[in-house]
Length: 376
Image: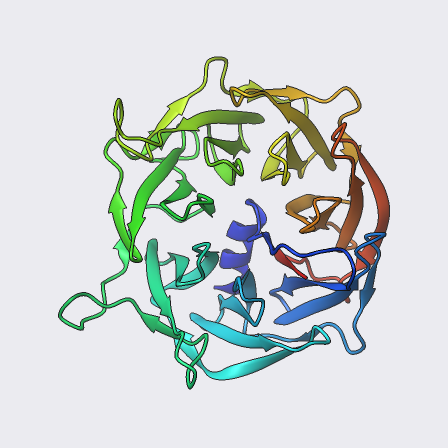
């Protein structure tokens, strides 16, 4: 089961997470490593982007730890454990180390994705076997702070998992917290893929009218612009990027519905696009091309269309599979999943979009990382 779940996450963007802060103190970078069930932890120098592994890293995580999400309070970190079908809650110490709060929370199926609303009230879990989304409320009570309970209806009964019909390959929530999007295959990998859209209200998922929306073959990573106007999908088998506008008002179309932009999808000259990331300014889109072994950079117009940067692509380690960004927006991190798995740090020019490699940092051993979170 672990190999199946890990393989699914390797063809999509990891649950890249960042939390805002200044640049005067160290940050911490967390990377999940499913095969040995470990979490690598680094101290990040916010001025240089250099990572230093904490003594003893990598540390023990849950069985098959594969995805990660951080609470906005920066007090807690959650992981999905694919080999045991449960979730772990960790408190984050001032030195960046993690302390697990037990017991773990069971889920139905194999959890492979985590997404949290911006307020930190709900945790959404994308699962395979069966393909579903499960919602957990996050406690604010002082004696159970951060703990998870299944979302309940008005009769005090847990909501059943929302069936999505296809294993999730990418998962993202809009910055407003109003909508959740999930990529998946259709009837076969040779057919166009789909993006399923749900509106969110007090944690409850409601399908957006017109969902699912069609995209390219084998869609994986999703990126949403900081203003919540545009959504991008990496179509791995087509080597393309689909561009969509997100209906905000619901006047001409249902709120949250997707409309493909003119000229979409945009073809890449690179192979195997997996993970996507829009920078903090909303001016640039970055694409991890696993087969080509690079990161492509694009400028984003005011209308949401993308145009490749003149100095793109930027060299990355073997099989780049996921992306994350520093809260300052000055550094971008790439997780590589080739023969020598690493986290690669890049400086990011907010004026040109150019990436310059800082250094590569090993995760410990030869097992591939699958997700990353950055906390300051």
